[in-house]
Amino acid sequence: MSIDLARPHRRFNPLTGGWVQVSPQRMGRPWQGETSAPDPLPPAYDPACYLCPGNARVGGEANPAYEGVYVFPNDFPALADEAGEGGSDDPLFRAEASAGVCRVICFSPDHGKSLPLLTPAQLRSVVDCWADQTAELGQRFASVQVFENKGAMMGCSNPHPHGQVWATTHWPQEVATEDHHQRAYMAEHGGALLLDVAEREAASGERVVEINDDWLATVPFWAAWPFEILLLPRFPVQRLPQLTGAQRDSLAAILKALTTRYDNLFETSFPYSMGWHQAPFGSNVAMPDIDHWQLHAHFYPPLLRSASVRKFMVGYEMLAEPQRDLTPERAAQMLRAVSGMVHYAG
Ligand code: H2U
Ligand code: ZN
Image (cartoon, rainbow, N blue to C red; front, side, top):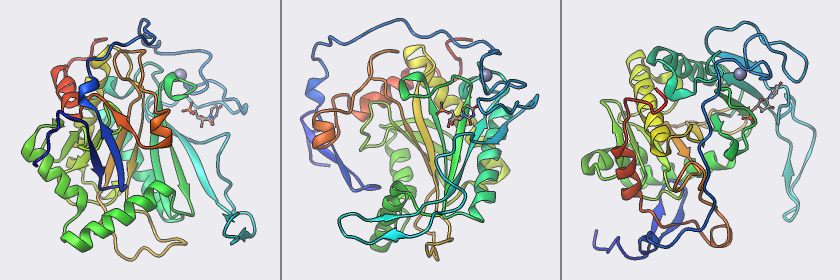
């Protein structure tokens, strides 16, 4: 690579076709933003929590006294089971009906146990749940989106550890974009884009935060968010249900280590939006080949300098393209410098 990465430059995201402006020379500029004490960890049970076992949800229905992972239909689903009628091909005012299901996944009955605080066995059952939901919903829907939106800073209304799954009859935009770029990469280079990325990242190690025999967590070369992570399998796999028992265990292990590092970085329950991208299914879109797909997870955390100082994607970023000061290499170094084994809250 014959470019000075210490000077302003742009990096290309081969998965989306987007660019990011990197401005390493701005790292030392003075900061006059907010700072405040980190949030304390929540208690094991909150009588006011609508996700805790035995408590009533907003719709009135009560949660059972669940003991492991618990899935229920979202009481305020964003999608309807049945698509409405009609559509519009008007080139200026195009629309189509959409349908799908939305479910909530409680990771633990313990209100205070976010992912890094779960045992490997408990994390494994979260992985199994993600895979089972994908397998079941993939029979009826074209896309299954598993995700977790965590922390008040991300607009998450409740600290109880939970994620969601939305399955749709259409391919959502990000999935369609990634499908396009992975397909084009394989046509041109013969291999799977993200398998090649995993190999190159493992070889250089520069941006790797966690690695085991099956998985690798890296701050991608093209990361837009300060501590963004791309979690990649080191073997070809297109969807969650294909993972073997051993690959699920090693996934649980790397999830625990990565999220422990996240929490330790600013000694706070690290907010983020994370989710899995996996090969979409057939349904109303033809999906004959999926070899170009590689299963992967994105973590998009908003924090920049402390538990309360966040990165805002505004101004130039909204109007031109994302920009970062902290280099991905430096972010990876900072995440490597904190423990992936011992959580700050014990
Ligand atoms: P977030 O705070 O991560 O958005 O998630 C809470 C989800 O739980 C949200 O999608 C659903 C909301 O619709 N929910 C229920 O299904 N039942 C409830 O009683 C409250 C919240
Ligand atoms: Zn709770």
